[in-house]
Amino acid sequence: MPRLVPPDRFRTLVSAATRVFIAQGYRRTQMADVADALGVAKGTLYLTVESKEALFDSAVRLADAAPEEVVPFGPLPLPTPPPGATLREVEKIVANEGVPPALAAALEGKRPRRGRTELEAILRELYAMLSRHRVGIKLIDRCASDYPELAGVWYRVARGSVVDALTRFLEVRARRGRLRRWPEPAVAARIVLETETYWAVHRHWDGSPQRIDDAVAEDTVIAFLVAALWQE
Image (cartoon, rainbow, N blue to C red):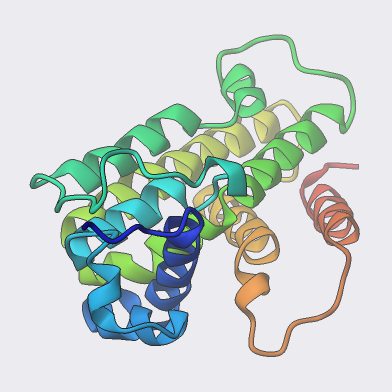
C-alpha cells in the first residue's frame, strides 16, 4: 500500500529547503541538511521530490508564493527538472517583472509628474518589487555563485537592466535640471539599487538587525534617496 504524504508536507519542505539554500548556498546544501531542518529521515524527502535539483527548482518557483499557493505542480514525488528548466523559470520571473512601470514610462519620454512625485513613484515601485520578491531574490543571490548560468541571468539581465534604466533616468533628468548631476550616474544608480535592496531584502537576514517596522523602513529609505537625488 503506498505511503501517503501529509497535505502540508510539500509546503514545509519547500520552506525548509529555501532556508537551507539561503544559509548554505546551492553547492553545499545536501538533502540530509534539509531533512535535518525538518527533523525527518532523509529518505522521507524522496516521497515528495526526486532530487536536490527538484527541490531547488521548487524553491525558486515558490519562494515568494502565498502559503495557500505552495502546492505541488505535478504528481509526487516531483521529478528532476529537465536541463535548463530552472534557469528558464528564473528568466520568466525576470521578464515578467523587468524594469518597474514608472521608470519605463519615464524613459519612454512620457510627460513626467511634477516636482518630486515622479522620482518618489519610481523609487517606491522599485522598493515594492524588491520587497515582493524578497525571498526569491535572497535565494538566487545566495546560490548564483554556485550556478554560473543562473549568475548570468541574475547579475547581467535582472540587476543589470535596472541599473541601466536608472542610469539613463538620472542622466536625462539631470540634463533637465530636475535631479543632481553626478560624476558617474551609473555609480549613483547602483547606490540607489543597492540601498533599496538592502532594506527591502537583505536586512531580513542581517545577523544584527534593527527592529524597524517595514513601512517605516521604506518611508525612511525613500525620503533619504529623494533628498539625495532631487535638485533643489
